[in-house]
Amino acid sequence: MIGIVDMMGGFGNQLFQYGIGMFLKEQGLKVYIYESNKESENRKIVIPESDFGFDKIEKRHLFFINLLKNRTFLKEYYGIVNDSVLSGPEQVVNIKKSSKRVISFNGFWQKKSFVDEYFDNIKKIILDNKAIKASNTTKKEGSTMVHVRRTDYKNNKEILKSNYYKNSLEHCKKNIKNFNYSIFTDDYDWVKSQKIFKDAVNINVPKNQLNYRNEVLSTFGKMLSFENYVIANSTFSWWAARISSTENSKVLYPNPFFKDQSFDAFYGNWTPIER
Image (cartoon, rainbow, N blue to C red; front, side, top):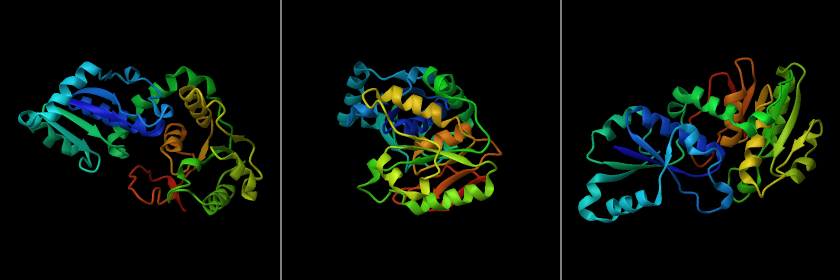
């Protein structure tokens, strides 16, 4: 059976999709990566699929897939599975029993069950990346990364209000020795207008939007250089916290993470803060 993982969204989402790809490969499927990001040049694959051990699906492969999709008598051999249908690893067994020969796996796969078993592999691939390694520095005691994501959330219900950050910073001051923090944001003006952020050591903003891949990797590398994390409702900062935090780290996250969709990827030593 051939599994095609549709890649979509930004870097954080792509890492979850690589996670499901690793899982499917472990189950015996021949896995290909399909880059389906067409809405923006700034949403392309950040780390190549070859680094994760996958082949990229080529145009000649798509020709045969389109035959499977568009010929009625061949439809029994092709299917699409999304992340709302495949809620856990155990369901792959049933999929493998079907008559399908090619299946597209479409979704964000934001579940611990598809990541944790392969986390060490994902972490190693990320930390071995030259751009990330060059940006990653030694952690200082009490250092805390605060992620403020706003620009693409302004037109929906997902934007986090200042109260989340106010409560998070208060929690950190009480529970982190030598607490100090730096902010990573895509909305510099809003951050500067908020008095709650007056003690920030640094405010980091994207500098080179023309080179999306390099900007993402260098920013992510810098985000890994902290001991503690106040993450936004963003898989980008979720992955930074997941990769860089230790048992002694403080990781704070907004609760609920998303208002309009589920997100099942938290850990017992992480602290929810009402949004």
